[in-house]
Image (tube, rainbow, N blue to C red; front, side):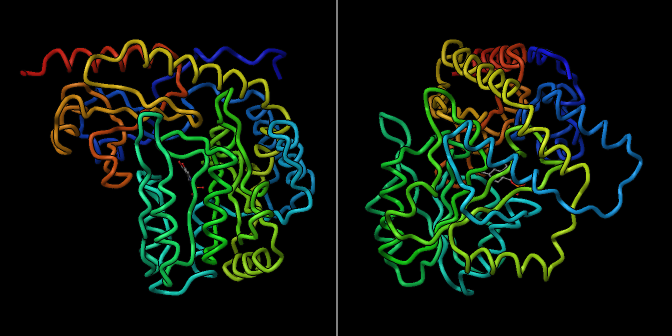
Length: 392
Ligand SMILES: Cc1ncc(COP(=O)(O)O)c(C=O)c1O
């Protein structure tokens, strides 16, 4: 492994748009589109991970393999050193994806017709996970205040009190609005859910992407005081850009929840180990700290670029965490179809339109900013040129 991780300035076109078919389906066939819509880092990945994958490929043996204890151990050592979180007494299960974990928990902890709380605008996968299981998505929309997004706790209390409401999906750090919920905010939400016997799934997959000085608070660290039932999702897929390789984790303090999850997961045979996934998982957590520090610095500097250089009518809601910038286009006065067309056809940018995250996202769009500054400057130039060309 190189002694110094590379500066985040190397990027190739294929890394920006590997899934060109999907890009065309969603945004049209403009070959000049700059795609910044998928939430993953568009930089050279952690060198220790690349070396580990190459080494694993070199063994020329890819059959059944037992997962060594060191894989989960690497996650907990990382959590202790980066977040001061000792979770070794908790139950940790492996799951192929965050979506799998949430899907199983919906099945196990709710019945058809029950309500599952969401805080839109929020990550697009949650709602289909709920509705495809014949449960109801119960919205507790975030409030956009002068100080940024806040939870609407009165509304949460009212919705949690409805007898059909049995679960809440709490996203921290929050995709797409970038909030890193404080200990007090999490404790307030936990207390409400405890009062009304609502199970909390804390999706903490962006935990490592809290941008200093903001700090990630594990739901586990406040859940105990409230008595709320909970589980949390974790793993290296966002931190190290390994969604195409690695498994994720489900963490809980409750033996029953862990047993339910493991039984279902074994029934569905979701437990086979991927040899590359295990190698990349452990290498990320054991060797990726310096690389991640550089990535966080890069994201922070891209936030400054956007803050300083976006044209009039477009503003960034500054993220406290994640590598996602939530851009506010409401100043341009366009409706949802107009804004979508304008972004792809005039600005030649493929961003995730805000309404994908719920109707509260109308007028916004999400841009991935874990990318070299030149890409962000290019995106800003495209937005500026397109804004200048608007016939007002
Ligand atoms: C908050 C959040 N949860 C889950 C996921 C996806 O996880 P998975 O692909 O493992 O289901 C993402 C991906 O962007 C995400 O942002």
